[in-house]
Figure 1: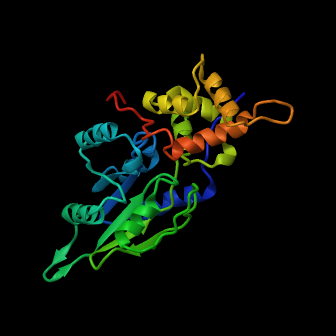
Figure 2: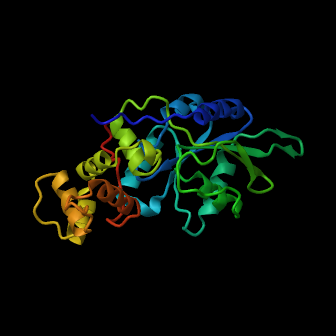
Figure 3: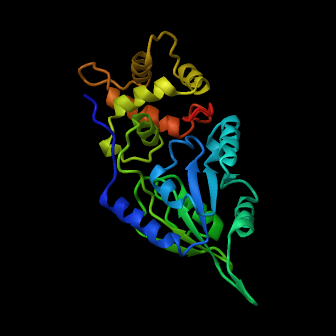
Length: 280
């Protein structure tokens, strides 16, 4: 029996309280979603807390996601009344675009010659890329970037310029991942600790939901012609990579880890895990 994926360590509970406590001190929320899985990376727990707050949604890592799907998601969230930015930290002018929109929609107090500083609360699930956005906006390495979920555990206040401060919150999930398809998508994108994940189950799930374009690249790259199901593909992948034990047994565990890693790295093309059919 495959164990249910669930990850809500103590620091995430504390982080949730940090968000609640700091929300009233800030003027605007910057919510970071992964453009490869915008629906799955949206935390319903924080959504309840910030629902009445001025907010910008950043569809982050758009450089590795399928453009047509990102545009659909942008329209979807805009139709719900959100301000949405498709973000790519490598794109020229990205920093200015985000800062200009923050200044435009943030609600700040103005008394005679005094104008309140804009305080931005930045939130997102673990390993969604908050640190890279903070470093982009501040123009320096203000936040450490670690390619593992749950790295940031405390609040960090970062000065962006004379007008804006960022309140960086630890990444949090929700305490009951009822929808295991969402949990698996988060795990595929490295937003849940690898130690609690069944890699073979995850790789088989990935092969089931993988976009056909990605799958075609995978099959062509590893010369996999005959296959009946996802297990056949995984076994053939392992054989092609020569992942065989001494007893001539296929190392499915290692094959699964490598397959997931190559998928994350975009070796099979630009990614989308959440297709927008407007049926959510």
